[in-house]
Length: 137
Image (cartoon, rainbow, N blue to C red; front, side, top):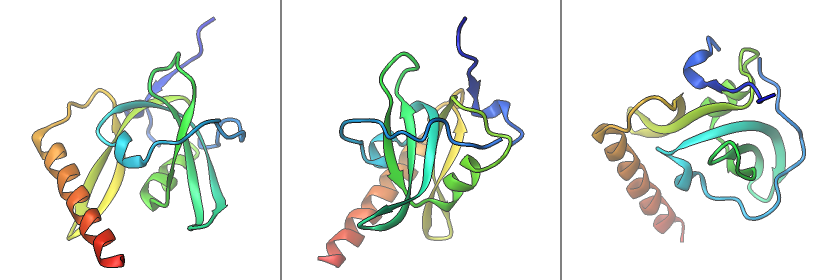
């Protein structure tokens, strides 16, 4: 029997992480995941790292592939993952959104097209991130 799957649009927002075991191997940066469809399979929050407590979001590029993960401190993503209406795995795209001058991330339906505005927001986020990283050196 096939595993039941969901699209982010199916939720009116039960959130418990799937298994707490961490995927093996290297994890991509969230930058590599933005604007690409993924299957979110679970999460572990408040994981102690050298950069403070972070959330490990587990995902698969395709449902039949091996699980991997990315680290995030995004409060918007964490609030969705912890919501009791969420079921795993769900199909989604993480898009960059700007509120005033601050970039953030939001889960969106994997059925949504990637618009030019989404590409522009991602590019602006990457420019601002590079500028911030240069200033820190």
